[in-house]
Length: 110
Length: 114
Image 1 (cartoon, rainbow over the protein chains, first blue to last red):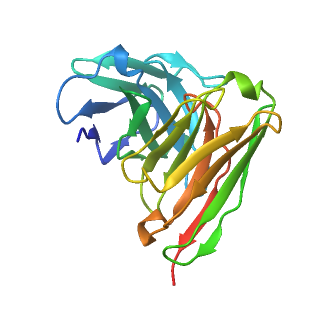
Image 2: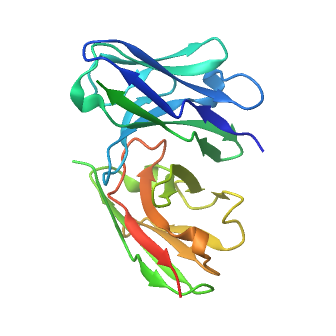
């Protein structure tokens, strides 16, 4: 069974840049997996940030960007702010109607 | 404004059943596939199910296949998740989401415990 991998945790300084990644236990992530990214704070529903690799969702500031870096999907946050401290999840389309979420990355801004 | 509102969660004994509903507004419901995603306490997100816009095609995660059934009533703008043979490991907040997870409801908590 394919596992979607994410860094369990990451930290960034205020104003800094951080890149979170989303990979596969076997194989490379491409745009064909329609990688998407979500932000979630405790007790809240996830918020869509990026879909289809690099399309920002409505209302998402341009300091959030998506891409493919090497064999992984990536979410880059530039000019990190305190309220970016959240859990970040990616999801990949596996075909045949099936989607798989990564385990999430807990981002700390300090 | 797009809104999704889940209901139907609660406490159920192992082996029991529950039906969740998700009522939507703010977009043309019958034009979009819909999904269910769950999150166990303190854990990550898990995709559960997908239903096509007309309800003709359904897909499930292996963990719920054969026990859960997704359906929709486009005349009522409502999505459903029938959950049977519930297990302790099904305890989670269940979210409905529009197609590629661009809009989410606030979730409803399902607790499976004796």
